[in-house]
Each structure stands twice: as C-alpha cells, then as structure tokens.
Length: 559
Image 1 (cartoon, helix red, strand yellow):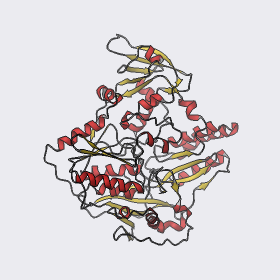
Image 2 (image 1 turned 60 degrees about the vertical axis):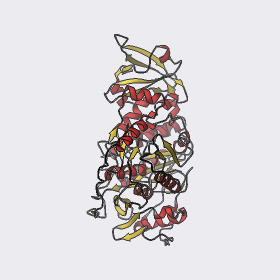
Image 3 (image 1 turned 90 degrees about the vertical axis):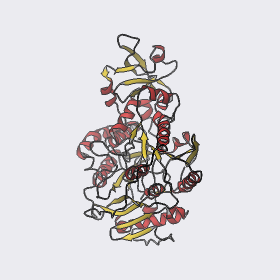
Image 4 (image 1 turned 45 degrees about the vertical axis):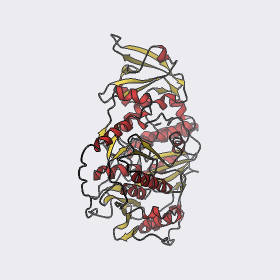
C-alpha cells in the first residue's frame, strides 16, 4: 500500500469501475499471496526486481478486491460554497479519518472553532483568509498526512503572516536554554550587537519557552506530528512575522551583567533566516520559501533519486528521498557496490525521505535484516460497512546477497510515512542504530486524496492505518503527541553542535561515522530473532483504529 509519495499521482484505483475485473499481471513466484485475512506481500523485492512499474501497479490493485465495490471517488466540492464545502469535508473526516480515537480528536469543537472563520472569509470573498482558516483546521489535527494542497498557491496568506524576518534565529538546547543561533549581517539585531550564543530569555515580554510554545506553526513545511517536531517548527517560526511588524528580544551573555531588550522590525528577506535554521537536515535548505513544497525542496538537496558517496574509512553513504518504484534500481546498485567494496559500515540517510510505497520500504529493509521481519498489517475504510478493514500484511524478507555489517540511520521530522518504515524495522530487529538530533515525523497511516475543494484545493487524509503484529497502531503519533521512530543515539543539541552545524558541518553524519568506527573495534552483538508466527488482529474489522496519516495512491513517477 502507498503512503506519502510524490504528488504526481495517477488515481488508478479510483478510475476502475466498481465492478471491474482486475486481471493479475504476470509476477515472480511468491511476490504476492492471497489469504483469508487479506493480501500477503512476501516482500523479497521480487516485484521491484521485475522492473515493470505498470504491471506492478496492476498487481497492487488486487489488494482492494474485498472492498472494491464499495470504494468511492474523492468528493467533488469545487462548485459548493466555501461554508458548504467545509461542512462536507468535516463530515467526511469525522466518518473516515482513521485516527480519531487514537489522537482523541474532538470533531465538534474543531468545527465550532473554524466554521465561523470560513464563513467570515466567504462573506468578504477573502481567499487568503479562507485558506488560512482551512490550514488552521487541519493543523489542529496533529498528523503530518492531513494536508491541503493548492493549485493556485496560498493566495498570499503565508507571506502576509511570516514574510518578515526579525534578523535572528533561535535554537532550544537540550538543557532547555534558548540561544541566538543566527544573526543576519547588517540587520537591526546585528547592529545592536546581538551575536551567536546569546541567551534569549524573553520574546515580546513573554518568557522564551512560553513564547515558542505559543507560536503558530500552520506554515510549517512537512507538517509535524509529534511534540518535538512541533517545537522545532515553532522555534523556527518565532522570529518571523508580517513585514514591518516589530518585536522585542531580551538577551544576555557573559560580558553583560544584566539582560537587555532590543526592538526589531521585520523585513522581507526571502525567508533567508528560515534557511539557516534548517541545519537539522544537514544542509541549509529554503524549505519555507518555495511555492510547491512537495516538489521544489528536494532539488536544493539533490537531483538524484538516490545519492551515494564513499566516506573516509571506506564507509558508504546512501541517501534515499522517497519510496517510489524507480528508486529501487539505483538503491540496489548502491547496495551491491557497497557490498562488493567490502564497506565496513553504511550510513543510510533518510532525513528528507517523503515516503511512498510501503512494499518498497519493506524491501529496502530486507537488504539488512537477517531473519524475516514483520512490517505491517494495512487497513482501509470500507464505506460499505463503515469499518476499517485489514486488507494486507507485509514482511521484510532477508536477502541472500544482503548486507550484514553495521548500519547508522539518519532521520528527522521530515522523515515521514513509509520513509519511517525502514528505520522502524532496523530499530526493531537491532540491525541499525538511529543516530539523529530528532525522531521521525510520526505519520505512518494510509493516506489518500479525499476531496476537491473550491479554489483548486485538494484535501488529503488517511483512511487506513498501519498495525503491528498485535493489531495495534504503529508509529503514528497518539493523543500525547508521541510517535515515530526515536533515535537510539541522540546527537546532543548544545552550543558546540549548533555552532558546528551553522558553520556547515553535518554534525549528525559525524556522530554516525564515529559510531560506525566504534562498531569495527568490537565484536558485533548477536542480532535478535524476528521470525515469529504473526498474531492476527482479534478481528479483521479494525473499528478501534483512528488517527493515521498516509496517502493510499499509486505513484506515477518522480518529479
């Protein structure tokens, strides 16, 4: 099943008439098995070795056979009034969003909170206000898969809200102290003598941690799903505002006996200070300053589907940016080269992995595991009975030609959906060590486009969940905003590591290499067994499942 992939989408599933017969495509023996409990993918990478995406997509459609007759196309609300469309999508989400209970979503309060804003925007035909109200609504649901994608942009709402830079960036350290981590040359902050490492005690007169926690993050890119993801974007957005607005910052340092307060005026910097605060990705990336985040950010990092290089000590670096079909062959080539070159360790960089195909993620993990590892049961909402039904299960099967050495995995809150699957399996089986500043996004459900709204807006939300062997939701953040895959080794966020990151060093990669070198100096610990008979959920009708964020789509290709 598909998760959050590229947004060049072929809605193959929805294009098939309800009663259409799906003819199985030719396939390698053992790639797919049909059982009473649903479809079982023995993910030995066979469907991807096949190297025929069209046939693979046809094969995948068979998964939905049990509920195909009941499936519906996305709601077409393009000709409805803004308020009518909002009411309709709210009703749709209340019915079909899979994590309502898991995340303790209060749908009535949500509607009462945002319906007046939508109505007010409609009254004045204020497109920016309408878009802002809808975005506020979906950001009130802590799920990175609940998203709103525009054909025509945000109607100027983002620029109006955060187009201005106060000339500084701040970072919360592990100690809880907040420091100035960036000062723009020539800015008012620079002229006032504010410098890197100054301790920030207040913003606009409010205690600094309280100010960060109160900052709106509706413009966060790759919407966060966990507390740490939310806090990260809030600290980045604290120092943004409307162009011309003023704010005060209270700072102190070792050379000044008392803190001082400086007034700053926001100016248009093209989102430059937000670029400087993207250091957790290992690069200065202008993620906020693009119109189409789902396709305009990655080219700043790489033009390749898989980035490979040899690191000092003959360690191999492999970065994978999504799980779309055409990524498999370059990933396979990278793995084969690493094994042929007898690399003593692999750094698997998933910090900017936007997800895609769960079957491919399970396949990737199969290159590293030593015994079969359970990946997931996948559910989907069945409109025919109003329940979430288990349709498939997936496993990561070990490869005879796989890699048995140590693997350091880099992740971030931008690691989302099936991108979280590989670290989940490697962490669970002891075949990889996650080494990062932050954990993954915590949005692992089965996502889909659900409605077309007025003004060219598309609403996505998950109507299916990923379950572990006990039938429990896995990886998706819960009502307490915990979830995703956490680092086994957290790279410290202190003044030293922040300074090094701001100077251009990929500090997380440095820590990963140090760990890999340490593995070569000791006898490897035995890998725990993961071969076990799966425990089926108590019922194939997973009615208790609510609160995932994934995209159940067929990816047409990489852009």
